[in-house]
Length: 341
Image 1 (spheres, rainbow, N blue to C red):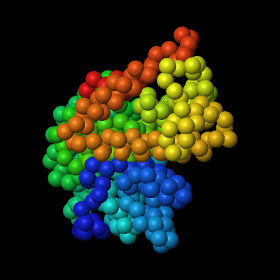
Image 2 (spheres, rainbow, N blue to C red):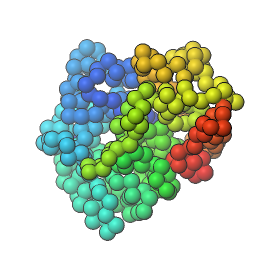
Image 3 (cartoon, rainbow, N blue to C red):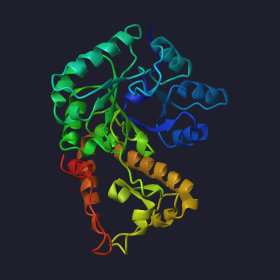
Image 4 (cartoon, helix red, strand yellow):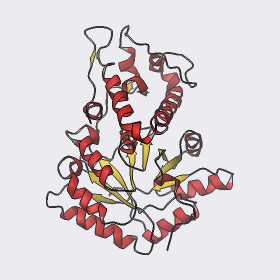
């Protein structure tokens, strides 16, 4: 069998989506206006999108059932693929398979065999693998060799307790992968997914929530500032997320904390320390990421790598003493890796 849409999938043509929960139709709708598509999380995703389409919504959607997470109930593969087709998916994705780190490579082979068996009746459906970040840092060529033989698109979710791309050489491993394997998408990722597109990936699904920017393997503890519940804010100039409490603690900077995007209209980002403005912070985040994606993807292909590297290098200059010597902010390893890739 083949996928529902006769036209070539939009999400195999250097695009980005927002990775969103199936429980919030209004968020799906507003995110779809800012991105090429939405990637909807969870088994109820197709039902939510079908209901939205019945009301006239006509944007592009992908679905991540989350079958790589043992906490998600197993689903019938045929039913899951059929549900996506009936919801008008841009392309069909498998329920997903978890690939733990295994230096022998056997776990990777088994996972791919599982995916191929599940999809054998669906000729152009995409395999979906959630991979331990060590496949990128320790054995990227094993990953390349295994995925090259799939002969179908593959979507990857990167797994790590906090930031998969902050691990030493993770960015290099990702670049090796997307430079050598065609039709790769990176789902449930942060803005580093846009870097993956710069180097050859076809799609990236960006999460607006911390738990939607990576997968935490079962048995491991996720990160985050448990003692700081203020809004998380994406700062384009620094290419990273910071809590509103952190931003409010910065002194007078050599650069302005005002945001000139239409969502903020020149207001300062430290205003999000006010918990009443949490919704405005969410609007800022998705708008800022959409503008960043547009800036990157609108650049000519032969200039993207240089432009992205320069963007990351410029971001590094924003770190250090944040207006006073007692407040020093260090860039995350992922940003440093992109700047010197």
